[in-house]
Amino acid sequence: TGAVDHRDIPKYLGAMDVAVAPFRSIEGFYFSPIKLFEYMAAGKCIVASRLGQIEAVIGDGEEGLLCGADDVDALATAIQSAQSDAELRKRLGAAARRRVETQFTWARAATETEEIVAGAIGGGPPEPGSARTCAATDKGAR
Image (cartoon, rainbow, N blue to C red):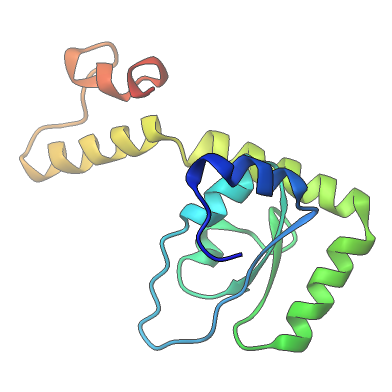
């Protein structure tokens, strides 16, 4: 489809049965998994390349189906498996949604960043309810 206006993304995601994120094997591959997070938040079954950071986000057979980078046959097989099994799509999509809601939130990222910075400057993690934790609450992160 090419570039899509961010306001149209929910419409496109809603039309998908299977969200596919295939990538080629590239030395030093780094991938920002924003696309995967969007697919996960939409509760979509994901088929993606087992490459770089993708495997840290999507568990094969848990939140999606992973196949080797550059393996066109495995990619086609995974897409067919997902497309032909509505129960599999539903289970993987629901698990992906749960994972993104619990492990990949802005509040969690803020808390982890705060802990890293506190450790680097010699302070311990902030006390729950302190001013330092206000920004890391779900309410504060919205």
